[in-house]
Image (cartoon, rainbow, N blue to C red):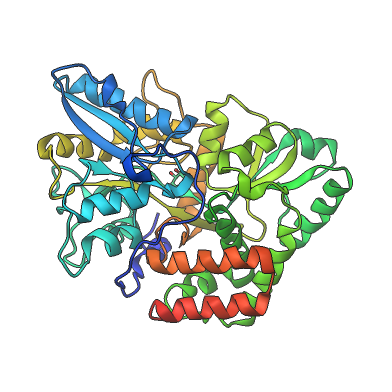
Length: 443
Ligand code: GAL
């Protein structure tokens, strides 16, 4: 992988101050006193006498929770006096967890470490903030930046040039997943363009099969579909330019993308906003829907559910473009268990740690020398092997919905516009709202 290929991650836009508006929807978070989401107390599984390391995440579904637990199992075995545990709050894309983490961390009572996306979500919320970073920079005893792609290092680093988090993976956001059986039965192949998609979707609809499964009880899943359409209609540079001001949001191609989105929305399951992303994925597994567009945590979901009859392809019009995001874990300056967290983060950054975690998670490792089999653990599957190759040759663009491309306040404003768009379908008004959202973000 070349620096050039990842240069887009280096184009970190002006980092604006923001408030992380609570996202809509979001799974089955446990509810704490006062009605707010609270993490599960998985610490109960820690042996007495161990020093606990609370890791707050939103990973509660099969592949995600399992991958993290496998990583902890090895770490806890190697460090018998410590016990890392998953303090999870359900809700895909962190719809519940992110707000809880942010409130606690900015108030000076953070979890020992927590899930955060590389890019704007990390830097704008916790690092490059007016009050000063609430995270500590990581030295080479924790993460060796030379072992990670330069583009990734650039968006985990603060203005001081130091890394502030450990990326455990690289996820691909712009992927189409499909039921091989439904495709074979209907003589279909993966649509390469949105025009192909509409042809296939009409054939499926005529047979009462949902063409595209959508689980957007958190609007982010719909936002991901929009992003893939923007990528198709604007190309990699045009899409990237949306986040740097180089592409204007009143561009006719954005109008086109909204028109396409409206049309695509006509092919999704009617109960879409009652479902989580993994419930939508289940419709594909059950053969009730032909396709879904989702990040490759869907691959981890298939693995966890032992479902193998699925195919994958870049979303229509997205061939050769890898829309990326990374889950990462930082060192809060006020973490109670500094020594334990440092050890855990170093393990997360290691080749062994990444190769334990990622085969279950569905993603590929962020470390450039990882991607190997580890004795006794699940090996990478065919999807992941293909993703590793695409990652080295595709043009990389960042994900808006998963923290890499835009400041959280900007992403929330886009989500608000998309929520209204779902009910009203007004392309002109929605584009005006997107233009305003960019202006409010400083573009
Ligand atoms: C993303 C996260 C993934 C996965 C997904 C669904 O934001 O990066 O790891 O958890 O949400 O919840």
